[in-house]
Length: 145
Image (cartoon, rainbow, N blue to C red; front, side, top):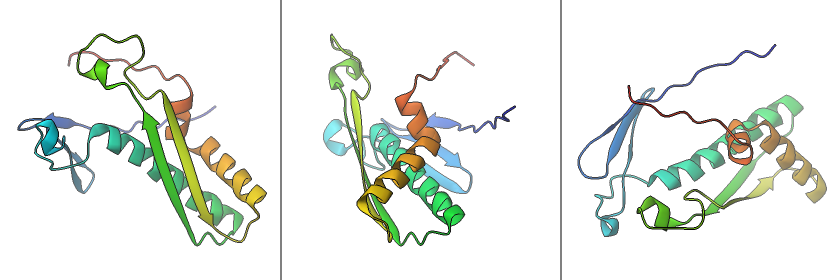
C-alpha cells in the first residue's frame, strides 16, 4: 500500500496581478510583465509551472544518478508549451485554455551513449510527479474556504 504525502501552499493576492506565497524559507511572487499591466515583480504563473516541471525533472535526475552511482556532471532542461490565451482572457474559444502540448528537451552531461541518455531521461520522466500530473488526468477540486 502506498503512502501519500500532502504538500500545501497558501498564496495571497497583493497589488495588481501580483500573488505572493511563503514556501518554506522562500518568499516567492508571481506577477505579469509591465507590458501586460503587471508590475514585473516575478515570473508569470505559466512560466513558474514550466519551471517547476523542469526543476522536478532535474531533481529526479540527480536522485536517479546518485542511486545508480552515475556521474551526472550536469543537465540542461528546456520546457516549452503552447496554450490558447483567448480562454484566460474570457474570450470565446473552441479549444482548451491550458497547454495543448508541453515539450521537454534535455541535454545530459554524463558518460552515456545517446541511447542510454534517452533511457535515463525516460526513467526520470516516469519517476517525476509533475511529469505524471501533466501527462495523466489528475482530479482537481476547487471550492470556497
